[in-house]
Length: 121
Image (cartoon, rainbow, N blue to C red; front, side, top):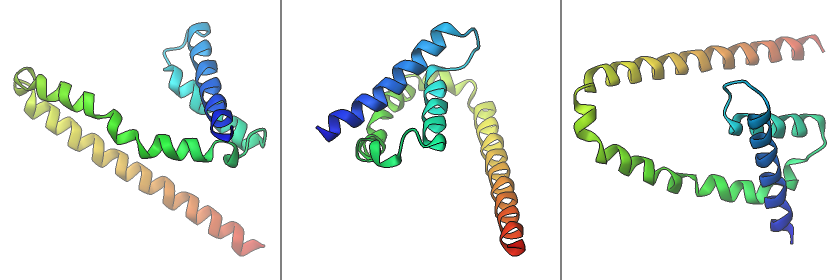
């Protein structure tokens, strides 16, 4: 029964995200709406991590399986991608480095801010 409750909560939030995607005119995927709803519920305390932990862990554990069809699709369209291989590689490398640098800077900023707050107390 616990798993059914957790799945119902997660799919309910997902359906609410789908509804918001249908209702609002913004170009935001429904999954993003769902993630923000889940974040809001967790931050306000209306939902606790224990309420969705086991099913959430299962979904995270099985996530690599979900990428198999996308990988097969990429392998199926290799001929089309060969014409843009160099620009695609350059864009991928640059965007990956940019995301890594931005993530590192934000993490350092959060750690510094946390250390300053801890030193004052």
